[in-house]
Image (cartoon, rainbow, N blue to C red; front, side):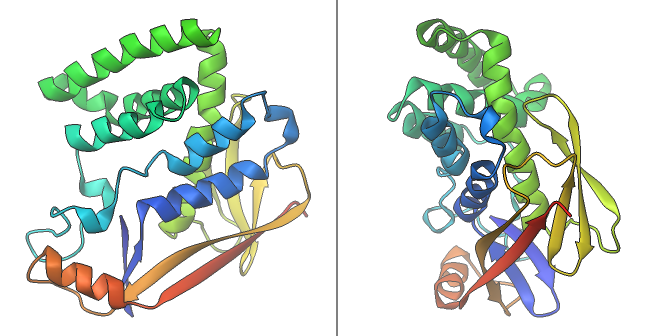
Length: 242
């Protein structure tokens, strides 16, 4: 989950809500990026974090009793295995993109984590097999993945409130065209991306979040109860080229 500390309490965005926001962003990209596997690409972007179901896990709290933000977590084989089980049950192409993403997220941990290193090595072998079966080169598969990574990065920036005020820019990532992109807020609630990568000149996106006033919890069950009782809110952003 994404846990932001605010004056009103903890602002909680689930990993699945973040994934859905990433897919909304992808759906607005220039149509030139779309391949014959466009629906599968959107599904991979929307569902790349679907194995993170906060209410089904017990490792939800820090030692101080606050909610665990996703950045605090390290490699978890159960999560990674479940991610790939979900993905391969849909298609090899979705599995390929999700596998590359796990490599991107956890590859740096391999040096000090034998379990992570073994998992990533096995995934890289599967990636080679799936590319051959799908008729994709490494360059093509990385290009498709870069759209997922870019939309994931922008979604995380928005969910973590990392967009900067007063027109200041923040780097998003390199897109499928290998160009760097910057995000800025031109005015309250209105964002722009430079260079502009989207099909239309203006569109809206939104995501759900919950505010939990309680700052610490005795255990995961207490947090789950507070989460389920919390009112669901919506945050909407307008993207505009102008």
